[in-house]
Amino acid sequence: MNILIIGNGAREHAIAWKLSQSKSVKNIYCAPGNPGIAEVATCIPIPVDNIDGLLNFALKSEINLTIPGPEAPLVAGIVDAFEEKNLVIFGPSQKASALEGSKAFSKYFMEKYNIPTAKCRVFTDFSQALSHVKTATYPCVVKADGLAAGKGAIIVNNIPEAETALRRCMKDQEFGEAGAKVLVEDFLTGEEASIFALCDGKNYILLQPAQDHKAIFDGDKGPNTGGMGAYAPAPLVTETLLENVKKQVIEPTLDGMMREGIPYKGVLFIGLMIDNGKAKVLEYNCRFGDPEAQVILPLLDGDLAEIMLNGALGKIDERRAKSTNKSAVCVVMASGGYPGSYETGKSITGHEIQFNSDIIVFHSGTSRNDKNELVTSGGRVLAVTAVSDDFQNSRKLAYDAVKNIHFDGAYFRNDIGEKALKYL
Ligand code: AMP
Ligand code: GLY
Image 1 (cartoon, protein in one colour):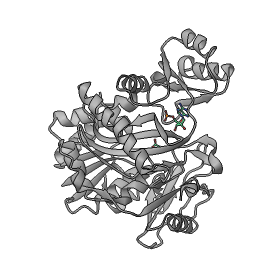
Image 2 (cartoon, protein in one colour; image 1 turned 180 degrees about the vertical axis):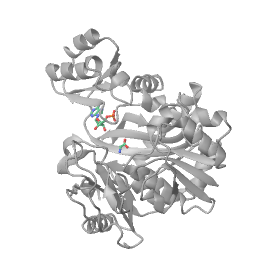
Image 3 (spheres, helix red, strand yellow; image 1 turned 135 degrees about the vertical axis):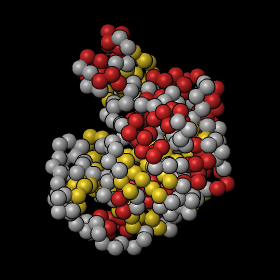
Image 4 (cartoon, protein in one colour; image 1 turned 30 degrees about the horizontal axis):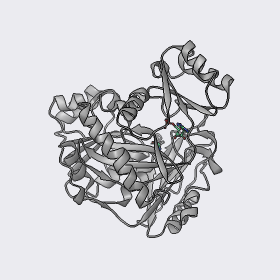
């Protein structure tokens, strides 16, 4: 197979790395990719939002399977455009991507199909939203309906904070069109987990449950980021809980989408809040998580290319994949200042060390300067993953590797995986 991956982050690096081990894969291309991805794939300089450019490349290069990494091209309809030209692509159609692309749609859908989630009200009118928050119970959550790069959920503690959040969305248009419609949602307490299913419209393969670390500082303090680290499997998600999630969330979701006439094909990422052993859905995403992909893909025992091809063709076979009994921990190294402003162009050393095969250094914000040296080029720079038979050992290996890698201002959390310890 010739494969095209779309994206340029550590998530796409993890996908490319896993595919590079598939017997069924001949050539891997990645648009636009990054220097880490270039070690396992041919990078081509087409941006992720240039759907026509990607389509022409896929036709010309006889691509047998395309895998979009991020949500934006999915919500923009890349799957529909490729399928119209009879190209095989593993992802949801534009309409099915609304599970992530419109929180109002996902709430309507969950209510209709009795999928457990927080109660919410949807508003398109500012004054109606404002009168609602005057009688709301606090804290609650104000959310922009559309894609907002992970910044569209604002937890508010009182009426003035709620009013400010509503203004930011509906009046100041901080999230553009995405904030024209807002949700005001009940606040859920508990611990979060990320569940991933590879779906073919009807059937699915479940991957290991993972946990992200969204806040910038240790102890989940400070502003949210794209994700500062992850581990899998997350022991918080017990066998019983996972069975319940299959029956109460994943299966009704696939069933419901079929009934709506928009079968869901692709990666289904369910963000859960777990309280007292019971799970509610916080959100759906129509793609892998970043950094979750960097821990769940190394644990997958199966040919990812074959699984995704079968997924795209509507014939996923659960028996063709399982997860190993190992555990994986990923520590993200970020530029100092992230998620606020930060400098780039810092030279990165230590990444070239030949670590043991249980360490994988996935790249996100890296590039090469005019001397061909590896330098920082983004907020999250590297996602250092360790895989071993033992969770504690994976944590130690990941942090040992991180300590060998250097760039000016490098920042990482010291407590990735700590929350798992109480369950072990
Ligand atoms: P979302 O974009 O909906 O996933 O929200 C982003 C983050 O905001 C989640 O991962 C949670 O940490 C937090 N969040 C969203 N909705 C709620 C809620 N109803 N209760 C508590 N926290 C929430
Ligand atoms: N790690 C969370 C996300 O990718 O949305």
